[in-house]
View 1 (cartoon, rainbow, N blue to C red):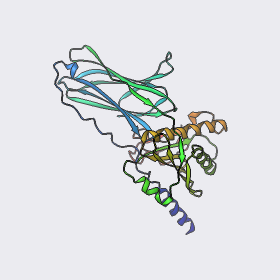
View 2: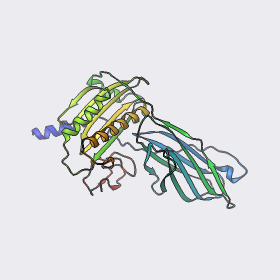
View 3: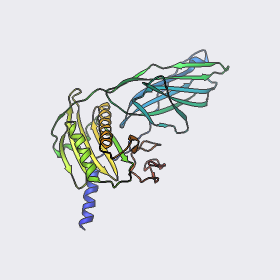
View 4: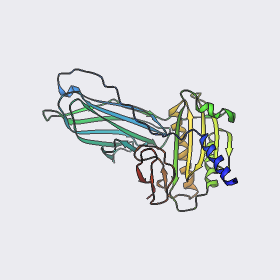
Length: 332
């Protein structure tokens, strides 16, 4: 009975986090604008936008053919700074190739190709970028080439979208434990998760890693408000001084995963904070010789829909996403 009660208490504790809803959601389609042009090439549009999505950035492209004739041999190129890494894309049927420029250490390129876009049709492509480093500034820009209805090559360029990660500074702030749920349910609160696994054969010492992630949060000057050593969950709170936004941060060890969860009204701030936690963890694991390479750290997001996976499987073992049922191997 004591064991059953402990398991129930653990379930109740994890339910308090309120982060168990899927992190991926259906992307809202761009609203089409009715335009009238004389030439087909003036009826081909490429629209791009970028916005925070969970712990990453979503870059969406919509190519629209408002003419009655198809266009063919469509090639889209997206150039982005190297501090962004393409972690997944939708739809998965699109052919995507990542190209590094040897002469350019600042940028890399993603190439997307498909054969035809029918008349009065449109196609949306979503690219999800994971930040690799902070205190950076760069631009994402896109272009498309295609053959029109008389087999002439035409090209469209888009305006650049600036991506910048500003430094953040946190001041400790006390939040009573009874107010945690109320804070998470405030209007406008955004939530983000970074969930990682360590690809090593050594015994996974939950206590050791829990101490590590707790200290990493403390080092950013957050105020500890609740800790549950038995269930390996800790809550922190603070105010970001530049924006004035309050931030709730949770660190936990759960199902073989190392996780940081954060909530605030400032979504870009969450991405910066969580990226900082992950990068610091990688660096310290390297210094301590726990891992030999950053490639041994795996981000536990479904490759298909982006939902956080339920556990970190062992080497060579597959896991099924509970949202989209896509089966995948994280650690080869």
